[in-house]
Amino acid sequence: MQAQEAVTVARGSGEARWWVGMLAEIKAGAASTGGALTLVEVTCGPGYQAPLHVHHREDEAFWVLDGRVTLHIGDARLGAGPGDYAFGPRDVPHRFDVGDEGCRMLFILTPAGLEDLILATSEPARSRTVPPPASEPPDLDRLGTIVARYGCELLA
Image (tube, rainbow, N blue to C red; front, side, top):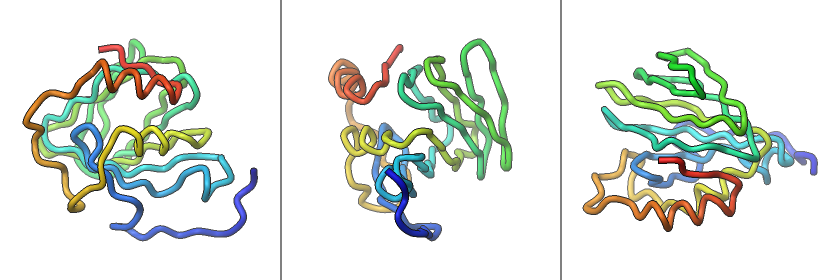
């Protein structure tokens, strides 16, 4: 499949979802890129910690726009701030920890498709802000079953 037309998505646009404690704004996916990539802008609150997971279908790149994060990719521990980029190959477990200021970053995944996982494991954002804290911890067994359908695996 090949992209059929040029597309632009303005800041503050894209489908906004509350996804596992983050604001995720889907900027591009299979439909608009001919299956080439998924681009998601995420906003995380201070101290946010992503669970350890692995993608079996796509590579993932991280581009930090604001704030600071520590990326754990395989055995590497990488500090990143505004303008910094990191790459996580498929089949390599990874996670990230957000600094005291929170962060905003881009997830760039190739090939496209992870937007479907986001849609299946999130809810429409009621505002373009980080979601309020959950009243209960997530059901990791249920979440693990869903993400497995999209070639991902929760490891912790």
